[in-house]
Image 1: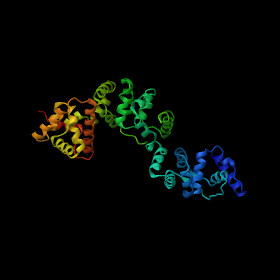
Image 2 (image 1 turned 60 degrees about the vertical axis):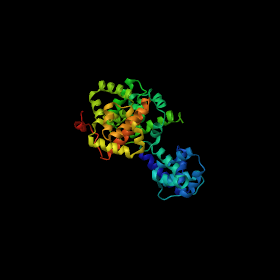
Image 3 (image 1 turned 90 degrees about the vertical axis):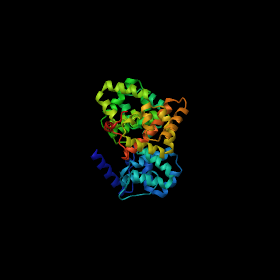
Image 4 (image 1 turned 135 degrees about the vertical axis):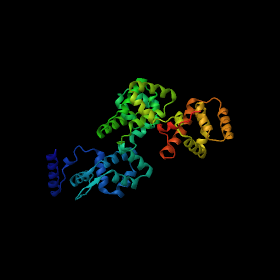
Length: 362
């Protein structure tokens, strides 16, 4: 391979000195790659006018090629330009990268479109196909994934938000869902080549049909997935995972935080949470519905943080709701859990299991 490169470069230098450019330098080169080289060769101002006249998919193809060019030798530049009947020669060539590609696109396209295209061509390190999958209906995604191997499904779901993963897993057969969870928990780092190959397959087979590589802590991720399950699914998969690996289930349980886990909070932290809810109009309006779906002990924790009059008014609001759908109550609870987790992340309260040592029993 090295000898071939040297021979091609020597041939290019000899042909350039005689005024001829060998077509072998561009043989087999894709049209989008040639177009990308040409765009860089003619400069931002000229290429901007060309980009404006192209369709979005054409811009994306050229942009993807441009971002992966790397160093382009002068002999190759000359060969490409010759094909386009251009008289252009560069002594040093140029470098195509994400940054130069983005600069070129900004000269020609709206900022919103540029951001969308760049996210798409950056692959797993950007939002790309993974974000699109995260926006797919859970039924469609579950139907597609149920025919894949659990390991493949685990890799795919590990790049999607826990809330969406929870909805997808709840549609799988119990054993299959448990298999996937186990593989997420014990997943080894996935190579860039494998990830890129998987992305191409997904784009072709799934995204087309329907219109990162930073590894997260697998136990924290699965715990967040469990936080987003409805109660029935959570109980069912907790039992299945516990039978499969009691140790794994214990680790996940330590990282979970559900509405019932509010009992972990100390009285002082509970007061801080209630104060934060009262400051947040949306959270305050959702509290009665969230408590409608909770048990009496959790309700009393909230009632104990306000005056007797305020507690009475809150009880009246809960009763006034009448019959509500369980999923609506759980959605309201998740909104409050999000607020509580934000407070914990900011260091305002402690939601760790160890704080349960301070639990009050009445």
